[in-house]
Image (spheres, rainbow, N blue to C red):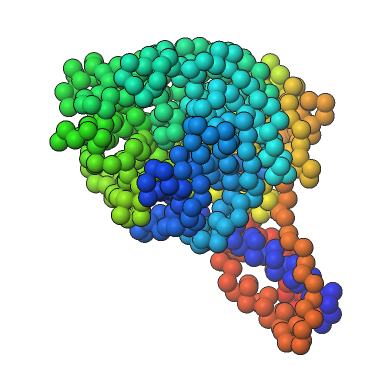
Length: 605
């Protein structure tokens, strides 16, 4: 066998292995950080499936005054995890942000997987409370400085290139940040006085809307006062509705709770807020409610409410009771908190809120120094500070963020207007631009399982949904239509390709078919054929893909020659084929048969 053949087979082996790993079923697991005391650096741990917590994955990582775990999709649509570390109020040292590639699920519980970040960076924000992305930008907002930072992610640069500062910064604190319909939204609290003292005064929270370049589009006051954006689920988006929990002002620590605590819903189209719940009124209807609203989660037809009081029923100051109630969206709208399904009491710990894992469907509750997984009914599995080997600091599932109800959620990154969309070859009966990516596609992107959702997905190394549009077309027998979208404000990446993706009608196939798109001078064009397979109404996703990255071929080993012969290389190829799951080569589109034929063909040479 020749060296050339050996290299060829090595490349094929690499490709087959990459495809095999990519096709393995993925499911998210819960990362967490914990501390021995609140002044200690955090250590990283993980809860894998139903197993006990494993910690440390890494020790003494920083963040002695706070940290966050913030999964996101990078500029190529690949899942990344940002760990943010805060060093204290009185220090001028900026937060450190470590960006990790979690890689294959099989490695998530391996400490070496978390040794080295893809990138470490800092930005102007201090005490980071939230991060969000639009295209190739990641944004950050924090408590200590009233500003928003924009960081460029392209080619893993992670360099800050723009900062917006609140025009009336006195007492303003960044607590929330999220993306919807191609726009960035931020929530700021407004404080006068020392927030650690009971006489502190809070004005209504503010919501601000920006374009991707941090130009202000609109702003408005909200109904609630004071919130802690560090806690998961303190705000959550469902469609164009944002649900927000607020403390009502000062967090009472000497007994009882702040009766002005609220849950509100904000219409993101108008920025108008409507109060749904207020503590005092809720207590009058439900006498057992004596808590501040501290988290929300929407799971299918259920809504879960998290409540907190900092003095437990036993009356010990500094202790806590945290509860979870189950209701529905309709009942919540009428002020009905539903039924209590959990109560957690403890003497230590400050973490509150609800986390939702879009891959497993698990609901997780923060409970002071502990974390608990919901099993259904009133059953929970709680992992206390002994199981975690320290006091809970933060947690998040290894999955694309889900701030829009059940399932992974990927909002539109490139907004378009209905008037900019035209179709030749079909009549547009209705169009709704800038919707979230369909759930099945969003989950596949989160999992990195492109082959399981998209035709020819096995050839993609990255897939980033840019804009999703729901169209109702009357094609009157026509089987082809030309689509044009003006004002498509996007710059393609090096090696990137643009596509229109659409799934056939129910019962005609589950994969998203792809149609090539071109972008010239801000005008996007594509043609969809076989219209009757996809329309009348369907959602078209404009996405950018990047190719599979195959590592450079290793140089031939120059040792004693053992194992370097082509025949042994061929034997390795057959062994690899034996370990590839049958679904990969029997499904037709999971792995092209040509790759297997090429490997077997090379064995004959």
